Image (spheres, rainbow, N blue to C red):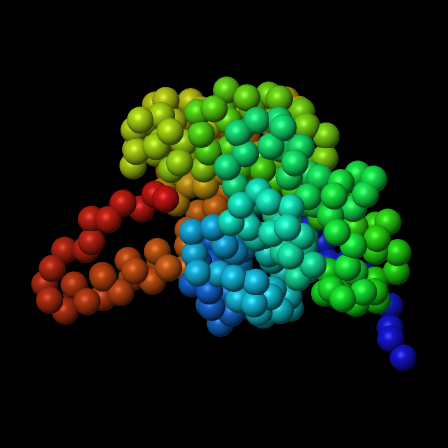
Length: 269
């Protein structure tokens, strides 16, 4: 006989009760083992990335299962703002999404629609087949699904910054996540996440979200930048990545035996 199952909390639930900015780490290695190691490290949330990493549906599923026993919120970025792709991630049981490359309110509304069943959206109904509803073991999942899902849209272009007030006003989004790397590229200063124009765009976006009563997150692998954005009002910050930490730590260890200086690779993503 089946037993009653309740949905896990999503990112908006953690943010709602937080008295500090939530720090998170990217998991880009497509490894459930690495995801579990990171889940036990003390971060508030994990960013499982399927846009710039070799994560696919099965890898993401394995990572969701691996980290579920830890007090951290898994957040997943699908590769594209597409209703079919988003539907697949939702059916895996992803409850917190960061949707990439959202440049205007229309694209933000499309992301919201992809994450909701009719009449609120266009998500296809397959709960009896899906982990999201624990194969229909979560009572009333179809009518409760919206309350279990966090929808963040990513601000990562000059166009998005110019439209940020309209984006954060979009009904159904819970907040934004700002990507300084792509923002810098779109501003013609690629690789310069600390450029004054980029920093100004990040802070403008944070302030717009806060003014609209929405959550604001930002990616900042440089600790000084992360703290600056937290002071500016960021609610959640991505502060590192499993692959970057492994790369820098192995370089430093190898260099320590060869008398070489540590890698000068930039810390910021």
